[in-house]
Amino acid sequence: MHFKIIRKEEKNIKYEIQEINQNELDFPILLSEIANCPKKIYVVGNIQILRRKAISIVGTRNPTEYGKIASEKIAYNLAKENIIIVSGLAKGIDSYAHIGALKAKGKTVAVVAHGLDTIYPKENYELARQIVLNGGCIVSEYPIGTRVQAKNFPERNRIISGLSEGTIVVEAKERSGALITANFALEQGRTVYAVPGSIFSENSKGTNKLIKQGAELFEIE
Image 1 (spheres, rainbow, N blue to C red):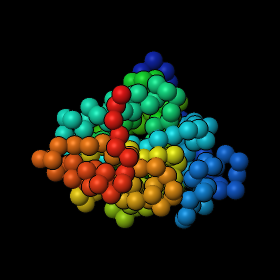
Image 2: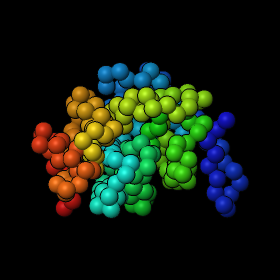
Image 3: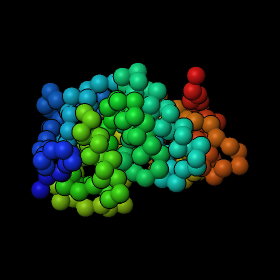
Image 4: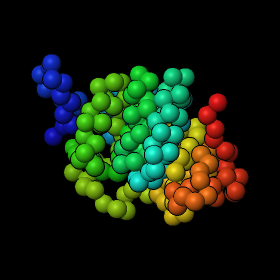
């Protein structure tokens, strides 16, 4: 079963799931450098962008309006500079990061925590479709048939940071999956950026803590 990409003006298009082993030339260089590198990845879409300069944008699934605007704007600006945007296709900050890149007519990579014969969450199917149709790709280390399991999401986060030269955390609570991605980035020797937020917002406790701990403060010029 293949991930279906359908345009209204076209017949159904089936994008093949490509399998790339760690020792192959198409395997992403940055990802190959991390500890616990996946032995293989599965990709739907444009594999060439996995070897280009990329920045990941992550954050809470329940963002404030500030977080939504910031995520989309940051992704838009970076994509305009021909930087690939990497995120996790989750609700919230991830989605707005992908959307920002698409609005800039840039390329974006979605790293998922299940097999590529499905899309999670289901409401992001159309977003996933647009990512692939516009020259981006969807990546997983899990083979077809792997269903959504909570334990796979933290493991997936090392790939998000591993594909990227740096990770930007937009909004995150004090205990957040986005902070797991930030920790992986630090372990991988990559730069971590944090977007400052309101001292009254639960969604800013994680990002403000990152800044306090030495993450680079991210500002829009």
